[in-house]
Length: 135
Image (cartoon, rainbow, N blue to C red; front, side):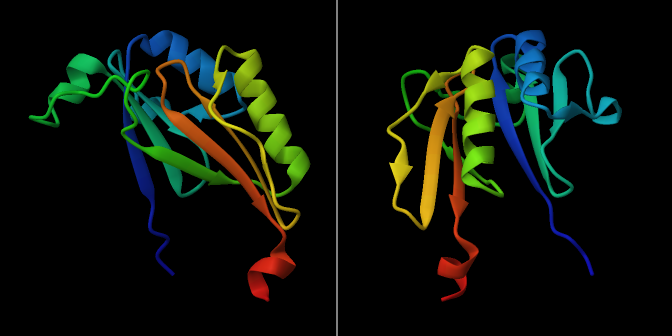
């Protein structure tokens, strides 16, 4: 069966720093799709974050590039397998230079925290109780 993929393209100010940030979270860089202006961050088999220098990103749009530290252009949500994995990933992001992007959400059946990466892009990490999803 075909697995559809998502490639999230994000403009970054400092590609080297962003690569270090995301590898510090435990993700890998696919060198086959990376160069001096682009880094392909493998989040899962079907999710890839393409980090692009702002000049490279500008080649793909005629729109003004948002300053994600001042405006919200996207909220990227990732699932986690447990509450502990939510905390683990967000704590790694904060230790690597990210910042808290909102209050912790704890609804019992759902738990989430969020962080802004080095360029202000907001990443939400959420766990949901599988029984609550099914029922």
